[in-house]
Image (tube, rainbow over all chains, first blue to last red; front, side, top):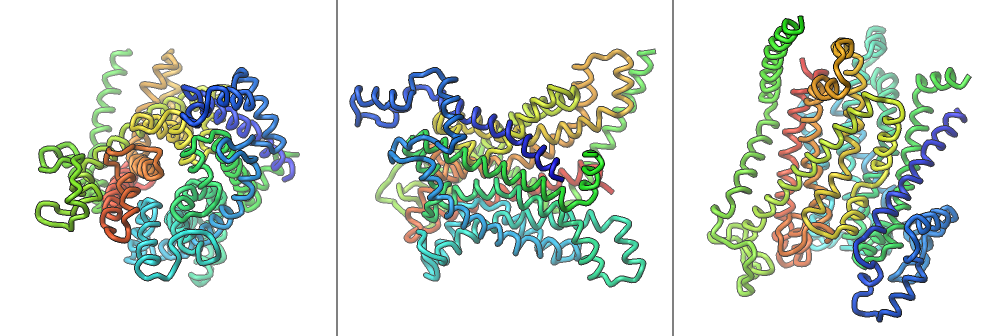
Length: 312
Length: 296
C-alpha cells in the first residue's frame, strides 16, 4: 500500500511541474508590456522601468521560470503588483473562506445527490425516477451565476430571509453553499444511480436475493457498498468543479476567497496574483485526484489485492 | 484476391452501416425527450440565423426614453437599461451561444481524436507524453484555465474559441485513447497489418470509423458545456464584450437592476437553461442510441 501511495505521489510531481511551466508560459508571453498595460498612463517611464527591473522582467524567459519555480517550491509566489503584498499570504488568508464554502457545498451535494441517486436506481423506471433524473439534469443545466441571482432575488430581495452578499457569519454561506452544491448534486445523483444499477446486475446480488434476503438488506449490505466506490472517488474529483464554481459564487456573493482573488487579479491585470491563485487552485485539484486514487485503492479490495501481488 | 475482398467488405459495410443508422434513428426517436430537444435546437438554429429578418428592432440602438419598458405588443419581453428590445438581444445572443457551442467543441474534438488515436495506437513514449499533457490540462480547474487564456489573449469571441478548445481536448483524448486500445486488438486490425497496410491508413481507415459514434456523443454533450463556459466567462467580464449580446453578459448587466427590473437578468438565464437542457437531451438520446452497451 505504502509503495502504491509513494508511486502515485511520484507521478503527480511531474504533472505539477508541467502545470507551473504551462501557466508560466501562458501568463508571460502576453504581447506588449504587462507593467505598462497595468499602470496605463498613471506611471512615468522611469517608474515602469524600475518595476520591470524589480520583477526581473528583462531576464530571459527560462531564467525567470526557474527563479519562479525555485521560489514557488519555497512557498514564495511573488508580490502582488496591485496590492503590493505577498501573494502567498493573500492566498492563505483567503483560502479558509473558499474551503468553508466548498466543503459546505460538497456536503449539500452529497446530502441531495446520494439519496436521490439511490432512490432513482431502486425505483428504476418509476415516475419518481423520471422526476429525480429530470431534477438533476436541471441542476446540471443551470448556470451557477443564474441560480445564484434567482436565489438572491427570492430569498434576499423579496423574502428578506437571508443577506444578499458579504461574508460575516453562518447565514452568509447558506445561499452560496446551496447554489454551488446544487450544481454538483445532479452529477452525484446521476453517478450514484448508474453505479448502483451497474452493481445490481452482478451475480452476488442474485445470490443474495436467492437466499431470501429482504430487498432493503440486499441493497444496503451488498449493492451500496460496491456502488459507492466510484461515488467516493468522484467526491475527491469534485474539487475541480467546486473550485471553478467557487470563482463565480464568490464573485456574486462577495466572499473574499481564492476565486474572487483570481477574478480581481484579472480585472486589475495583476499577473503574479493571478498566477499564484491559479497555481494554488490547480495544486488543490491534483491533491484531490491523488486522494481519489488512494481512496479507490483502499476501498476496492480487488485493486488492493492486485497491488499486493504487484509489489511482491 | 484484393479485388474480391474489397467488394465483399464494401458490401458488408454498406448493409451493416445501413442497419446501424436505422437502429440509431429508431432508438433515438423512441426517446421522447431527445426528440423534443432536437426540435428545440432546430427552432433555436432557425431563429438565430433569421433573427435580422424576424425582428423589427435593432439590438444595438440606444433609446434612453424607453428604458425598462414592461412587456408589450411591440416589445414582447420589454426593454433593457438602454431601451433595447430584450427579446431581440436575447435572440442575437443565441447566435453567439450556438457558435461558441459548436466551433470550440469541434476543434477540441478533432485535436482530442487525433491525440487519442495516436497515443492509443502507438503506445510507449508517445502515449506517455500525450497522456501526461492531457493530465496536466485536466488538472486545471476549467474556468480558471479559460480565464488565464482570456487574460493573455484578450477578451473577445475568437479567443473564447481558443480558450475552450484548450480546455476541452484532453477529455476527448482520454476517451478516444481507451476506445482505440480496444479496437486495436480486434482481428480486422491485425488483418490490415498483415496486409501491409501503413500505420496512418490503419488509424484513418480502420480505427477512426470505429470511434465516430463516441465522437458524436462527446460532441453533442460538449456543446452545452461550452455554452455554459462562455456564459460564465462573459458574466465575469472576461468573455464577450459589450455591446455584443451574449447571454452571460446580459445576465451580468441585468443583475445591477435585479430589484427594479428582475426580468432583464432572469430571462437570458432562462434562455441558457432551455438551450443547455435541449442539447443535453439530444446528447443523452444519442448516447443511448449509439452506445452498444445501452442498446437492447
